[in-house]
Length: 584
Image 1 (spheres, rainbow, N blue to C red):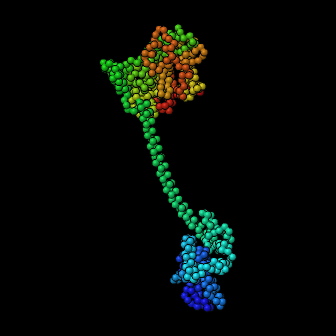
Image 2 (image 1 turned 90 degrees about the vertical axis):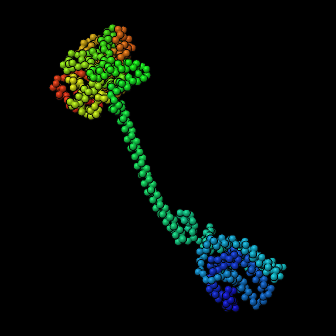
Image 3 (image 1 turned 180 degrees about the vertical axis):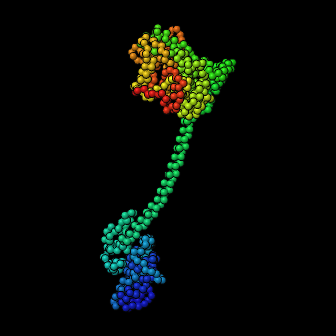
């Protein structure tokens, strides 16, 4: 008869004992050596064999020692059965109240850590326990021999297989029951599955699939977060771009305003005053610097006010008699010159303190008008007229605008010149002369016609203008008025042209920027060749991109003046009325 070590119930055979023990297997199992719990019966058997193999062997040997010393032949079989059930008894003696059964697959890593943690401690405790039992029974002397004769081969706690050596049993358990150990091994026959995303090794395909699904869910969530972040980044980038565009437009607008104001100042449209204000300011500066006595200041101021009241130039910037002096020079000297053509008599006018920096157009008109006033062919249209001062010229141009000449140019200059420092060019001189019934036209040289940006065709045109219908003397004093020459930023007056012995051409030009003291050097009896350097301009000296010339052709009848009273085609920059482009 066999009895249950847990509840004491008596059974007749070993199969009945195992069937009875199943009742207790549903309860919580506690390791008698290390108090491990939370595992099922098979796991606990493996735990004791693996972690407490030596303690359990010592107890079985001790029981066998008792059997050898005290037992009989009749009960050897029962004791052998009892030894075979020692592990079961040890396990079942730790059972508590009923708990659900755990599968081998649910064996946690904490259990494994408990196995390893308590192993050394339980080994020492079992040795102490064995020594106390040996002392009580007096069997210390025969212990070694009994161990050697009674040791039995280890048995697999999962399938019951018996191996000769513990190393073989360990290999068997790890290879055949690796799924219960939850420790994948290289020599395990069971197929292994690697996670394609993190490399985790699983022994069960379904578990791997669940594991991968978790990865996919995490990635899907992260992608959603990334899309939200991306949307936020795009919105931020859009805001930054809008802010940058706003700043750029603001900067461009500021630069445009500055450029416009700069152009207004450059062309005298910044409401900073006109000829009178600038004259007074510059004279005050001269007085403050000690270059003008106060008495001279008041004298000049009085003369200026009288000139402005009469509308006539005071003549203080005029130099006369240069054409006659040049005629004498070319007759007696200038051996390198083959021929020279000079315009009709013309006076030179230079800029004063009142128009310095912006009055060149007005001064060139004064030069041209001085030649016309000395020409009998224009007495009818210019009868009783004197050289006007600059403010008077501005008033005359405004009157021409009122008559309907060049409305586009008038609009560009705000229909106002008096009291400003506004520049004028060939178009304004054209409408002014036309309003005075002087026939003239403008010719454009809008691109270079020679190497290095030169304009040889311009020189040819001027040569044809002065040499037409003349004889063959060395010095030709023509009846042709001077030519108004305009280019970007400045204007001058052409009073003649030279032809060198090497057939090169050289213009003779009056520049309003040249002061009277320099021009008066040309009035000497013995003019030096170096004095003409300021007048001579060769082809290589004129390299502006574009040039305009205004040439006078005669007088207009009142009827012809009316016919020319229509808008200019191109406005202020270039003139379209009686305008031609020289063949390039």
